[in-house]
Length: 326
Ligand SMILES: NC(=O)c1ccc[n+]([C@@H]2O[C@H](COP(=O)([O-])OP(=O)(O)OC[C@H]3O[C@@H](n4cnc5c(N)ncnc54)[C@H](O)[C@@H]3O)[C@@H](O)[C@H]2O)c1
Image (cartoon, rainbow, N blue to C red):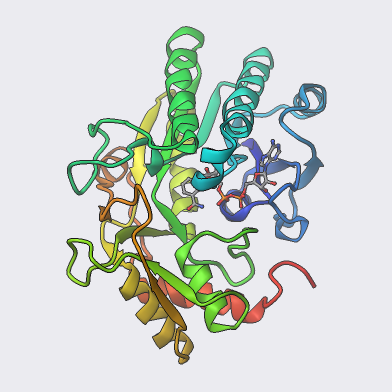
């Protein structure tokens, strides 16, 4: 299959692009490199530097290549930033996705895999969270993902688009040469590693009085390679003419303190920690049920052990202290 990977120079997209290549697919990466890295591009894939806001460049890309499917990773991802700049998030994460979807229809590309997020749920009242939970995003980032999911339903029913909306929980971990480098970094594992290496401030724990066993928030960390596996399976599903919306999570939650302790153990170094107050809007526990993905896609996350996840992230950062920069 020939697959257009939009956002394939980013953290998750680069690992998925590699998995697609390894599975024998032809890959064209389309990315504006706003947060992605040219060094993360999958060997053997074609790269088009462009913005999905640029309908002309995107159209040209569809004209040159005959795609069978599109995977979309090109989202802005910071929930906090989206509260300050909602318009930026709705433009990038919704409006430009419509540009992309309309071009897909124009060029008869009817298979779409979309990076959605656990943020569509907001603060759920039931754990583990399954897909029947109410969707009540608490920030424009989550809302932008939910709007696209709703649009996809209509593109499916009215235009015949086959789609998979994959609601990731916290993507984590690395391969030997592809890892997480966001700027600014907001994710717990790389933040903790950076503070151990003296490459960032001491790690702040936001709240130690949550109703959890050690008082810190519990989250669901899913290895980026397990996410990539799910994308390959989702591609097969949409290609067979079916659509799906499902969670992708580890199934087990880990507390902030458990993650910090694990980084300390794996690195053999103390983690400099500061305890701060709770952050407004942080739920105590967010853990996914991934039963639907297991049942419908036949997906099994294989790297669910916290040690394995942290170890892979530590290995990548230790061998790439400057990230993708030389
Ligand atoms: N990282 C997570 O834990 C997580 C969790 C849930 C959902 N997601 C979703 O997964 C997707 C990928 O996340 P990530 O962590 O890899 O982010 P990332 O920032 O590393 O990757 C995004 C990529 O998209 C590109 N991009 C952004 N806007 C673009 C545009 N307008 N035109 C062309 N390219 C553009 C960036 O340059 C980058 O390469 C996002 O949609 C995000 O919302 C991520």
